[in-house]
Image 1 (cartoon, rainbow, N blue to C red):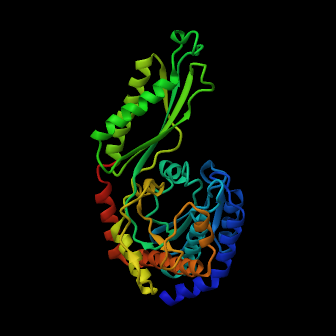
Image 2 (cartoon, rainbow, N blue to C red; image 1 turned 135 degrees about the vertical axis):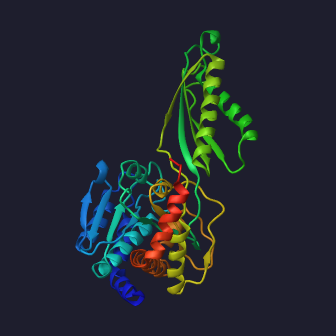
Image 3 (spheres, rainbow, N blue to C red; image 1 turned 120 degrees about the vertical axis):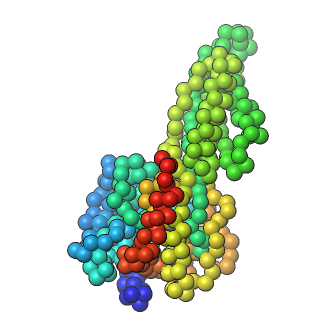
Length: 391
């Protein structure tokens, strides 16, 4: 089966390179990825998938499905293709989405032999309000057995953890006045915002060391001689545990409420981006993927990162067994994501070789899940244990 998968990957490789190059040349921000989603959809449709564009009411999302006549588990590959403002594909999503679409097609080519179902999901806007959150909330993953995604990086890293995150916005409302001649008649909304930062800085001493709070004042007034009647602050609150994140977010909100009360202002609290759950890597599935990489000649696979941010795949991992490893696009050299240099690194011969290896490894992992009942049972047992009693 390994050689068959590699042959299918080799036959598809040039089409995948063209897909990645086309998306690189036309970078689109989150929920604006019209060209990218159509290109993915067209390639998947060409290879026999039933493709739905505009999936779940999101214009740049898609769902591509192929079902074998023989029953079996459902494997989902998650494609991202949004770019970053100013620097294009500095996170490499042109290549990431291509790998997922490629893995789906390669697995589909052997599915009639082994059974099961393969889904490729186009998931817009990972950099901001990730569509995977919407999909998870709407039950898209309820009938999926395993979900996989692999991200470009400087090295191969095993799938690990991520921080649960809430993006909280505070809108403070006060009253304008002349700041020199009648300041006593004003209510300073900016003071409420500044007070929030002071209170949060005091709170930091009493939070878990692995949690994070960071924010900005996104609107602080219009002129220095006018008491601001409106101010706005935006924060990211993060924690490795979903339950503690909620506790911490409540404390941050109380900081804002008290700061507003202190100056006589009011505050409206909202979320300016969707919330991300922490990533629950399924170790049984992760080990299966690592084994396939090694079988394909990959010898440098590092343990999961100890430094990490937040990803919308975390929400998926609370609904079905999920992994989010990385694959190397450079050879033995450091490279920093969210840079022009990272974007350019996705287009090298080395990156395309590792793209092909990762496509094969993801497809072979799908084969293993479908054909090895004991592996499938271990994956599901671990998932149930990890999510028991969690919401």
